Length: 136
Image (cartoon, rainbow, N blue to C red; front, side, top):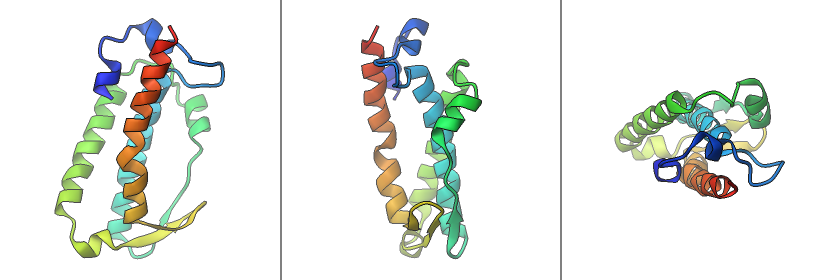
């Protein structure tokens, strides 16, 4: 994500590749919110038996959480959540990795599914940021 944002101007951060697509700025805030949410989800899965994982509406987050604000602190939140979760993953046992819970929209949801989703999430959005910046 840092590479995708390197040298970005405000104009590039606010450009949309299409009217219905997010700007790079909005993607950064989404990634921070998503990473913090994913960090809590993993912790719930590991710490609780049959954890309940609640869905959230990312479009409502974008509409209501002022995604037009500066990105610096969201970048720090993303980085801190990712680093802290990396430390947790390094410390987890095989039993921790085998934990399962229930997602409010998707049903059975385990650490393995969590990892599948979030391992590539930021990389996919970094590509989206590059496309958004290229729209300028």
